Amino acid sequence: MGGLDEQQLTMTAYVIILRFLPTVFNIVSYDGREPQLQSGTHEAVGALTLSGGAATLTLTSVGEDSGGLYECRVDFFKSPTHTSLVNLTIIEPPRSVEVLDSQMGRAEDGIVGPYHEGQKVVLTCISWRGTPLPNVTWWREERLLDETWEVGDEGRQQVNNSLVVERLTREWHNATLTCAATNTPLAEPITASVTIKMFLLPTSVVIRGPGAVREGSQAELLCTSSGSRPPAKLTWAFEGRTLESVQLVSTGVTD
Image 1: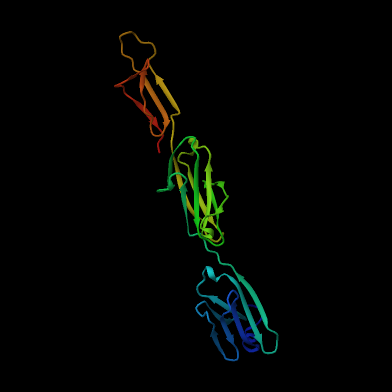
Image 2: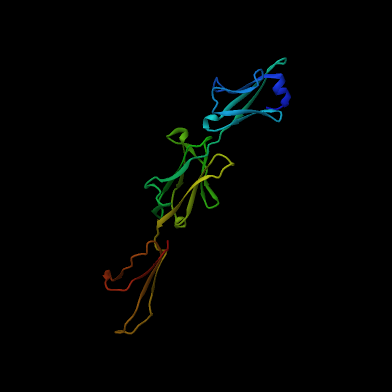
């Protein structure tokens, strides 16, 4: 509370009261008629000091329930009562975030999947607690994917953002997605990241051979598959019959 020097506070003011308006109790009070600081009912909440021309309230332990309107009232010997109000906003960062797969449940070790190409995937990020409610967003590296969120079944304890990928393509394999929850620029967002794993079809199958060969000679044909995960199983067939005892070579996609 400003506007009064220390002499005015201690000589012309006979009562200084600081009150938390959601309650009917004084936090601390000072009575100039008795030169001592008198603690109010909530003496553990804060302390009043008179210094530097101001009456200062120091809150000793700020919690979520400390937010609200505070009143400072000064009663003078010969002047009208002076009252000042200040609203204290308490920001509680989100406690934690977790990622759930709509089909497989909680992401384990930061991995989701494996999924098939063309599959629809729904990943839900759940942020727990936080005042005010946090913004929950999905990112792929530096690119924002989704910023729409809603309050969950647990009311103000839970905020959800569901990322929907209607049709997975192979470009999503090994993609790292990050969910971020934040409600203030004063603190770093709380994040959780997952990496997508996929089953991938071969991108090519190639047969190589020596070309024309002489009857009775040996010919080597090489069938090569690439781009699959896991590596593709290769088989040879001749006129509808599967050939056994052939050497198979395939190349897949590394994890």
